[in-house]
Length: 364
Image (cartoon, rainbow, N blue to C red; front, side, top):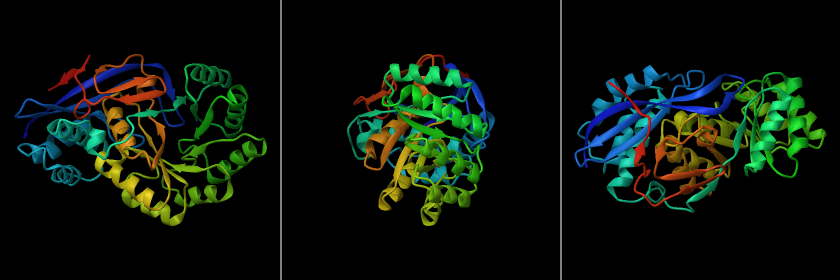
């Protein structure tokens, strides 16, 4: 099975409610879809969102990176040569992790199709059912409380609360949500780099002293401030998770060396795809550190790939934040991974199992 052509599409899916963080606000998912065609008629699907404030990728840069730098290396290559293909993708250019991720997802999809097995089995197997949390966007306190209660009533047992706007209001947000859902859901805080190290320690100690138990705090300080991450980690009881501070394996090794965080958040759009995600999980497992697998604002194409990785690496990926499909008004994808609110299950269809993508707009 050899690669013959690579084409692109734009996929637009409206969100149920606006997605708001300390960094940005989004009302519609608008992602680039990559389709890798083969001489046997198989198509592998990949996807990447534009997250300029996090990865630096835009829609235009994703398409250009693949079209002009990655694709020429892959045309004519055999899907069976997976390691060579991932090396070609990763070595095509610096950075551009979302473009690389989209390509790797499509290649891994075809690899599973080649051997007529679901991707998670090709990666080592596992229980094809996981549970995700759901994100509660930063907003007025009453709105966040209402959204949290509604999420619990929909069956979500873990809530990821966006904070990082105003330290005093953030504390009150968490107090109010905790009071509304205590005993029914675990709370994960995500500050999206919105606090200083001292602010984070103040906020977390205030909440801890009030008897509020948090499952974790995600990326409380700026991505490059590993010393600040360590400062927070050493001074609070709440586990600290690194997100934007960790893109690839080398950053994971440095973070572990510094003891700057307790948990690592893996996202395919940061790692440049599945190959580095697996490396990060293996490094973390060697050091006894748990991982979460998360996503940007993505549809069930690339989120499906993350699900397969989570299933295959469930021994170290103990937390799941793959709520993109749950935040969407509809699922444009038929086949493969089944998203049912907090419950996610994987079929035995080959690769990612995608049969159809509705509403895809071709990009020439």
